[in-house]
Length: 424
Image (tube, rainbow, N blue to C red; front, top):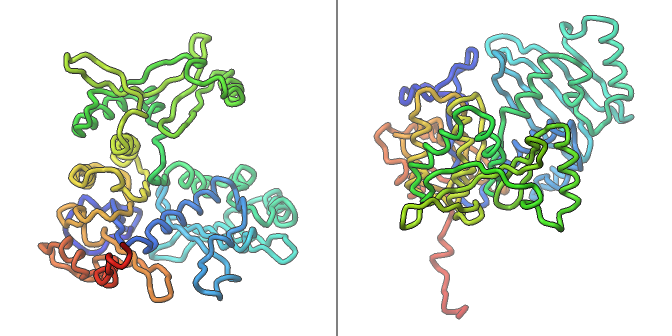
């Protein structure tokens, strides 16, 4: 997401300390080129941080086309800007063991500042080193010693002990990964849609303003209260008991199924479910309620994206979306993405994978915001930017891409020679 020296779309460039970073990244490539694996890798690192360590061995996820990789560790590292600092966090894992882990404040034009380094020894204990400014008392020294000896298990992240360590820089890293890095897959549901419409000022208005431009037939999206026992079926007794236990102290709980996420809560001593209802008009202009399960896949996909669009516009959130074009008409998708990228006051970042060539437009993206994924002869994925080709500002990059000028497209030579009749 580092910005190059291109002069177009200057409002796409954010200041991250002394660095310039970009608003968006569109990643193209043939089927099987590894685009989704990039998203999965980011998500794998996120889940390690969320869970405080490895929940199972990483070996089944290793690269299988090179036998030398079978015994090698898998390494993840991410750099991000948060609370006026650039953090570099990395972890090296093998099997169900965290072999190494490190966290620095990136110096950019000066030496990096160590927060911690951790190495797991053959004994299962950890060798931990903190930067001097983070060890201020004998109590701090003792805690680190105890962590290395027995408190930190080999499958756990030192980052996962943030509540014990009470170090603000470590808290910042956990907070950013947990809250400000969001992954959306093709089958992800918009878990916060109903919650946002009931809890966040003006979010419901934003949702309906966006819906008006979609031409989906939905006139309005509303949140309606439904009796708890009416919404949940008789055969869901176990789930019902668990939810009632969770909300008995006045909490609101999210509950999801294939089509929607609802809010389960207690109001006026009554157990209720808050769910989104799509309002359509019949021939006589009467309002007719539709469940989201009755809407098309494309409409539900758009509803999944609305909280993301709101987050990108109004918060420093990084959204990573796999297959952004799934179930959405190309013209609509192009309009939506262009609107986000054209907005001068956008605060977040949009990173997505796609096959949709209509988005390959230098009126929408800068050259350094377009990326390609392509496998080498060994089956490994390489990522490279359109900026490496130094295209002219007026070049039709869509046409160039489809003609194979930038690579990262399917090879169809053998398909053209296929004799269908022999299989008739």
